[in-house]
Image (cartoon, rainbow, N blue to C red; front, side, top):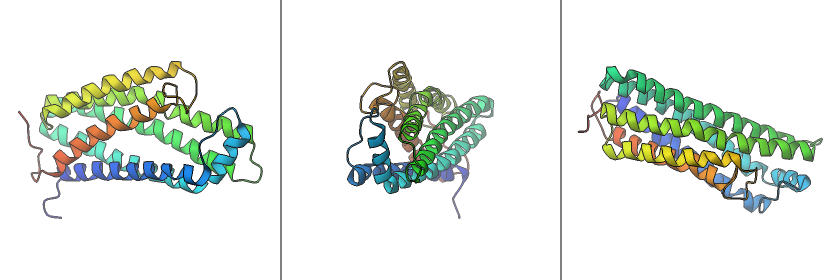
Length: 238
């Protein structure tokens, strides 16, 4: 394709990653339509019934998230290449940002994989309610607070990368730094117990918001900036 440089491909992959993850989030909203409101984790048989009834929507959402984070890996690789080409002396920072992003994806993939395993167990004829409930809770905790520390590091490094190489506007650097602080604060929810119905817990609402919103905002902003460019080398912002 004429005009489709690494810069524009990076923006395209970032936007595609966000779209797939948003579709996954929408698919999750259909779980309540299929299975009703999520039950308390203290009632293992109800958790098992919830997962059985919401199996279709939940599995679809997880697969969409898998694809979305795979595309995000492409965005990370492109971001590193664009930054290294624009400022070779800051390649170390580009590599650090790339590594932090990969760490986030790896932890999230572990959580998603555990969720898929739980769903497969839930619809089997020999499902153990206690085991299913335990693994389901574990998958939620793994993908929440533990992923927030590398996510905070990624946002901080990405903000610094944009500021140092000038491949992104100043406001994206500020967004990365602010997001990094907020996500790191949210990571302190690891000290709380496991309760997905609570706001502040190791797998509560705060962790869901923190692992998605700051990354979405920063990735969306960077992707739009890159996609609008036609040059083989990223534009430098003053």
